[in-house]
Length: 169
Image 1 (cartoon, rainbow, N blue to C red):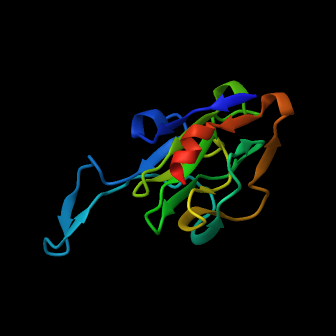
Image 2: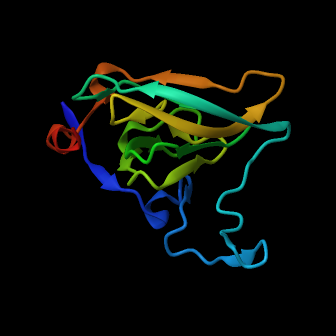
Image 3: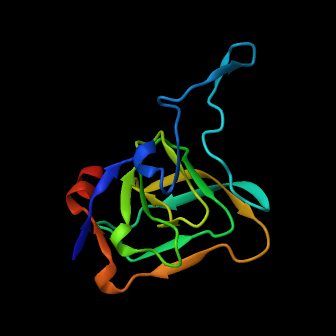
């Protein structure tokens, strides 16, 4: 069985897959007569259709977690911003016709960081660490199928590092 280590989420490490949405270390400017810091353009919404905002109320999956599948959205980006301040897991693979099991990576958000998956990036559906969590989601709405799923053969599946998962609970 292959074990997938969980890396801390940083802009540099996540850059091949999308944007980290956070204010830490980012430049800002003042608006609203100086009472508000604006951290401008932390991510870019990629869509040829309409960008929409939704709230996803998620429940934690059973751990230790096996990564058996990934999905992608070929017609637009998809962003997740945690609303309750809880860390969450992110599992990704580079764009392509199918996810390459040798290039799957796992990250953990510190609960103040969100992510914006670039168009076509393979990723696992939302993975909360707490029993329940909520996310503000920015993605595409429009005609045509925008979710491809890939299920790995058993030999290609990953077990998220059980020792790291145990420390999350």
